[in-house]
Image (cartoon, rainbow, N blue to C red; front, side):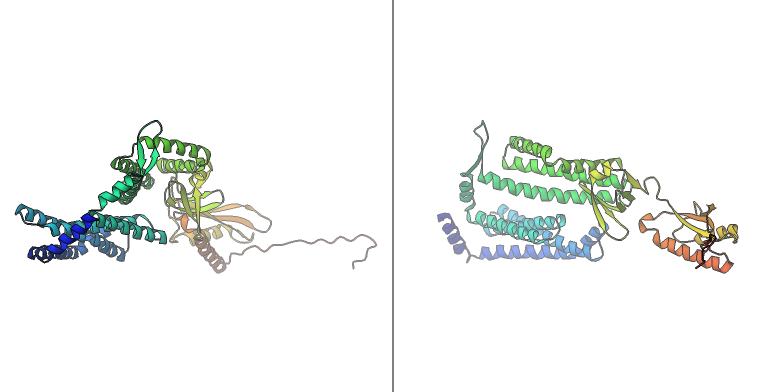
Length: 436
């Protein structure tokens, strides 16, 4: 408390000195110059973001503005720091400049962390609460550092033991726990942000297979997360032997209750690495049919033709036969069966069926549409029109309907008759029975 009073008194006594106003003017000039530089480069930043993303026209501008809000105080702190170095070289007092550099850098660092968090996690009420809590705690640490009370607070936290290593004299105190939580959270956010950025860059590499891109992105993100935890523990000073305790507990948990979850994660990497399924494949598994829209490390999303999405565990896709319509080729055959009357010209009817399918936007020319004579039925002659499409994920109902209507119109125009069911009824009467 005495140090705080002395610091406040010293600041009050120096506030009337001319050099204080000069340093405040330098800080203001640094902030203004940084703002002008960022404002001038905002369009270039937006174009760079647009070139590296698939967002709309509005998203790059919003992201450029958010990134500019991060760069502006950091650039201002750099300019003020250079001015402080110049003042120290000339042996001029620069206490106010030093304070301005600290405040500007803290503001930029806090904004950078919040920017990275918003890029990694989806917006939610809990996320907004955590952001406000982090901002409050970060500024409290800055205020304690400026006032000189931070060492007293850290000493008080370090005096509270939390965990004693078995068989050793090492112990973990409350300060290490808080520092560890902070550094783990910070490094995880940076790792997830870096992993997402690298994954986005991999997804834009057309030379790599889609499944390989996803697998490499997931692997890099997992490696970055592990490295983030190890680095944060080393920074705080927590011995890595603690990981042995938690690793053993995690192994028991996997063996008892998390084996299905672990199986889904392993199956996810198997699917991504062996490329048995790719994003965009049209598949049928169990009772689900649709296009693969996402392949996650734990589950795969299959979107049906009616828009519903099925979240399937990866274990199901590995242990269950999967019908993949686009594994080696996206070509899918569609068949339309019908009957014509026996008195009709069957060969001409088959020509009309092929003509109705040929030239359609979704019907492929190679292989060409083919009409087949299947056989004799009780009411007419069975025919089938077979044609190929390469977009089965759009469904076959629409193309079937168009071709059926075209065939019906062609049959009516050329006099090809469709069969009418006929039934012969025989009435047998016995001798002596009345017909009524």
